[in-house]
Image (spheres, rainbow, N blue to C red):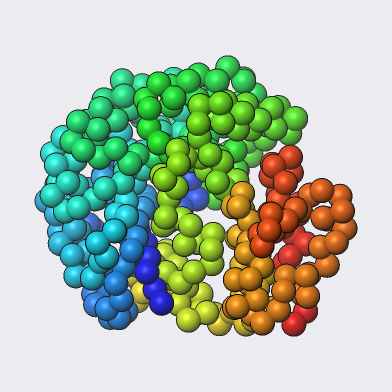
Length: 364
């Protein structure tokens, strides 16, 4: 049963140096046609399920003006939703104002994710971001003053090797008193400005030092690391993202969006021209039992709570140990059991990718 959906808005006022998501510079002449095709795609594919989480991502969804956002929110009203809906939207602070926040409230949005990345003026320029610290603080205050307290902030570390940058970023985050942080080490992707420039990664030991500082400092302030890169106060975990990490079904609407329905991984075209001409889907792949099991383990072990063996057996008719040779990893302390749950020991979460690679292939 599908209970979550993602909606992609590809428009941005500027293109960030690190971003490899499906995006295009904002141009008003494309927006209304895009929204019309988004409506058409939803009408073709949505089957009337009751939805528990909606996530509007991008791109920069709030690069749309208020009239355009209202059209988007009216389209979203066609979904049947639960009484406990988590309704999120990604925003950049430089194009967030009181009128847009009031519109969020009017249409029931109750969670906002702020793409900040850093408070450091030099790193802001390197990332080709355009906000100021004052704008970030002002955005958080406006949201709180209007009753939106479920706020996430995105930060990136490792753009350079100066530990003082991440110390200051975490200090600013804590000063703002918001309940959720997504904090990622920089990844340099082909096709991004960083990739084209062949930017180099910082030293891995310094990267780990930054990660450890983030983890330990947030723990001291009552934040729970519930996923490799995500920290929250109790009760503020992102329910939408947990859909992905629990390998549950979800809709994805919009250019470049991905759906997972009835064990089919459905990818939409990343070509805006095709999307605007009504060609939405570009790939549909059935995931067999072997792939399903692999994804359940790989995604589930990103969570610090791990993977339920009883749930795994309910889904696939076998225990985890029946499928994977995990004894050596358990003996070495990389993997541990907490009752029914298999999880990665906290000492090894930073190198979790080296552990997860062992679960890519398996035998039925």
